[in-house]
Image (cartoon, rainbow, N blue to C red; front, side, top):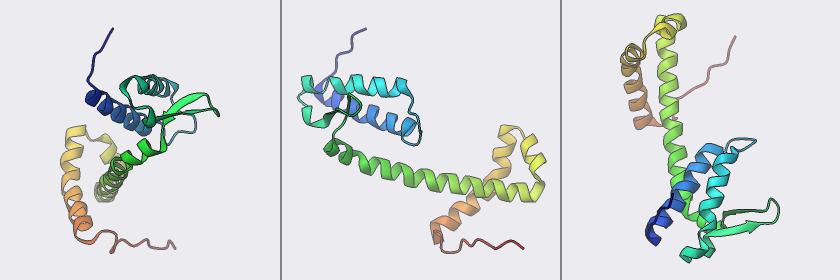
Length: 145
C-alpha cells in the first residue's frame, strides 16, 4: 500500500502517532512494541519531509524518538488530556460510589449498561457541578474508626 500526504498532513500524522503512542504506552512498564514500531517507522520519514529536527536517534536503544523540541510542542495536548481525564474519571468514580451506597454494589453490578447510565446520571451531574463550582476545596477524606 502506498499513501501520499502533503508535508502539512505528515506533520499532523507525526503529532497523532506520537500522541497515540504516548497514550497507549506512557504508563506501561513494558511498552507495546507494535505501537513503538509504527511510531519509529513514521518518524523515519521525517528527514524526507525536511523535519529532521523533529526526531532524534538514541544510541541507548538504537531507535528514533521525538526530539525534545517536538515533544515540548505537544505537552499542552498531553497536559489538557491528563487534566480532562482526571476530572472525568473522578466524577464518574464518585458518582458510582454514591450509587453503590444508595442501592448496593450487587444491584449496581446487575444493572444493564443503559440502566446503569440512567441511574448514574443524577450523581454525575451533582459531582460535575460540585467540581465546576468548588474544585477540590470541599473534598474531605474522613479518617476511619
